[in-house]
Amino acid sequence: MDFSQNRRWNLGYVPPAPDMPCPVNELPGIVREAVQETTSTIDIPLEVVVQAAIGAISVAVHDRVNILVPNFEPAPVGVFLLTISDSSGGKSLAQQRYFRAIEAAQTVREQTFNEEMVEFDARSAIWRDEGARLSKLSYRVAPSSDAANRVSEMRLEHAKAMPKRPVRYDLMQFDGSSEQLRNALADQSSASIISVEGGQTLSGPIYREPAALSGYWSGEARRIGLVGGDKSVVGPRLTTSILVQGGRFDDYMKIRGAAAFDTGLLARTLPAFVESRPGHMRRTLTHVANEPYLARFNARIAEILASPVPAVSDRKTLDITDEAADIWARYKDQVSDYVSACGFSEEVASFFRKIGQHATRLAALFHYFSGESGAISAKTMRSAITFCDWYGQSFVRIFEKYAPSAAKLDEQRAHRLLRWLREAVKNGVAYGRLPVGSYSERDLRNHSSVRGEDVIFAIEKLASRGNIQKTVGPRGGLIVRCPDSWERPMSPPGQRVKSIFDSDARPTVFVGGGRRSSQTEERFRSFAHEDTARGRGCA
Image (cartoon, rainbow, N blue to C red; front, side, top):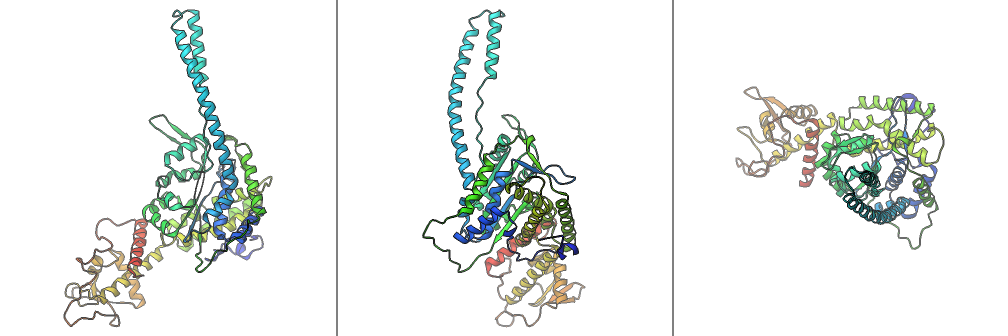
């Protein structure tokens, strides 16, 4: 995507098509060749493979470099990846292939840790024995004598020489608690959460604290007071890669979605959605596939992991060229203008406010993995921006149903009220002296699937479309009248049909009265209602 010659760039930001394919050709050469080789060899969905490759690069690179853009402090390059798929096919295979070098390095680190623990235990026993000998010696010398002073100095030097317990450096964590993650970041300043069965991870203890995860993404230092002493997390670097099935992700959003939006965790996430492929059968291999490009990919990961991990203060900071900075700034500003004009909900718009940070992180990962020298080029920045376009349309596609815009929220309310009215007429629901098919505003506020003031807007929208008629009752109140063409109950005249909307037949979905819900709460209650309706077969 050459912005210097593209009409889209000259005329302002134009969003990508909703069905924009994964821009695999924008990946660095080694990565692109490996991904294409994998998808052609074992038929794993492209999105799953791309996310696995980018996740592996982030794990290898995130604790080695920072990214610097004009007027900002050096920032982390680690990414939070989310892949949603209704099929479990290929998830483990992709991770096994693209995390091969990382798992090998993890095995070596575990072996090294075990060896260091054996030595530590032996040195600790010797140290304790020496301490006991010096303690006994202190009782054999006269107090305040020269010998006593020499023994005291020996005991002081001995205390300083206490063996240090080796630190376990884990490249990946698959599950655990927030405390374990915090301790890992305090000990080694970097960590990764990798899960191909993300439903359990998302419902687990780590994701119970979305604000902490957001802080780690931003590289914020955290100091936490504990009973056993303070813990300091300085310059944390965190990568996450979560693969989850759609139903499990719905469960997560219902329980923790509002907090994840409010803390900015989801805005910091790069999501991908894997299309289901009905009737698609995976090919069965009868031989061991030769994957030379994948071997090159893992060799580069191993090369990066073999290099020394710098101290937090010594991390290399990557700069961007003037041309790349100009492309980045114009893209960021034009996306911001577009989002302000298009009416996204605050929750969805928050992702696009971080689009600039997402672009620089991806550009840094592509640049470093490719082994390029100097500042990040305009070409690399364009590739990162193309990926941000893809992630952006994926974000809208995935999350707009959980956090619809105000216009779509009004549309949903109108749709719910229309569906309720049709069901009410069909089941012979009547209130007070009004006949079936006529309902006062008060009745709808108290009994329909849209409550409070929202029912007024829903009525106006339906009336403007001609779905219903509005009249004024004898006492001046608003009366909604449904068309005579709607299906009516099959019952003898004068006999009222038992309705599913009767209070003794089923509870109402929303509870009226009380404080007005926040926009986020209303959106999630709306989503919960739509999900409940689908379960009743009312979709």
